[in-house]
Image 1 (cartoon, rainbow, N blue to C red):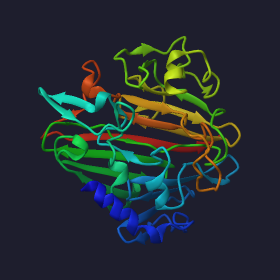
Image 2: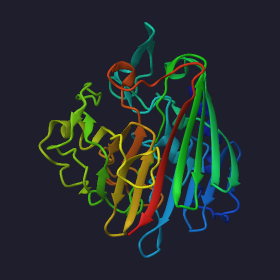
Image 3: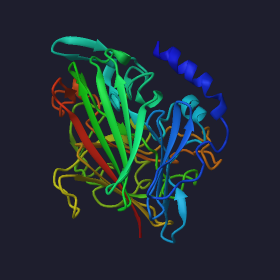
Length: 382
């Protein structure tokens, strides 16, 4: 039934499939502009410093993030498309800008057990389940509302994932709130409740290129990850269960390092991922002032534009993926092809395959509990 609904939705979106669908103007910081295309809407957040974040209720997708460089020149740093058809029909399903769930990342063999009962999921990534299934949260229409207050401009998106949707147990009520602040931060708040025990691992899947989307590869970006360990994987990218030190390996980003410096090293883990596509275990203590209870997770600096991205999160892990499967076939908003390693993702999360890994932090949400996490993306330049 859900597949039939998606087919009907695609047919009904033909009127939206024109260049510029996501390119209309944005209102002032005291109001939120909304482009209304029947059930699909585009929400345009903007602060007084000129930062813009565009969000659609299809897949809770972030379609654009516009920020200045060190000279004040504005540029869109988020990979994506000009129209909804791109997100529906994308080659290789890159999940540009989407909220992925009910379980972000991979679950081995598309199955897990809770209290002795086995659940089988849709298998959509080799032998494994990836990012919630064939029709995950990135392929559904969310209910949305907006508000403006002292904290900033907000888009609140809600979705009810029904019991056994893509094989998962429990009716899961999900809420994701995007907030653009006057501190040049994009705050992402996640909430969920369930009526049956179920795994939940939500994340945001924006691909960044701080030079600007479509402006070549990201190998010269300098990355810092506040993580002394990572979770090695097998050839299908499922964690082995080991929590391994990064010291002495290409996975050591504890000090700023160009993404491309070690990417071609003779390393089995890099061969499995085709580059970096792994989960880092975030350190408990934050080395950044003003972070409060949030973990400092990552910082990325792009030398030619001076743009800086910082990430703080309440989550224990972060998946760093450097666009290994981009190959030039996808054309983005600028009309430029997205080349190999033309964008990177930093997905705050619990560890992959946690339902099958007893030594990993649990991702099982039970009735009466509330899933609540927060990630803050900060934008600046130097």
